Image (tube, rainbow, N blue to C red; front, side, top):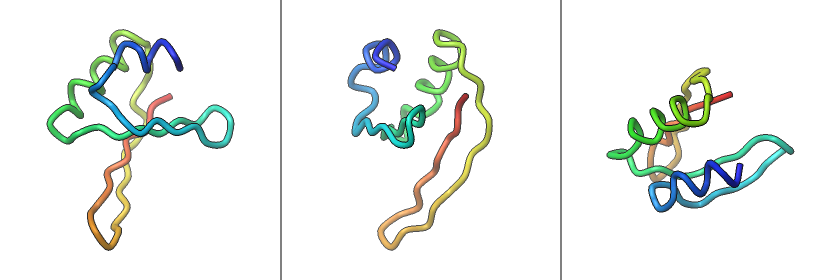
Length: 66
């Protein structure tokens, strides 16, 4: 995970580890495609699915990679 955090740099924020191998981070909407492409091309991750959470203040889009 440290290699990914280092390569993505300031394009992502609010890193959080949950449940062992599950990690969360925040990405500005304008950078979502750029970050997803890097995760797949440079780090060999696969896009698995996307989901959304409707909160009182916004709608969170969650992109799941493996």
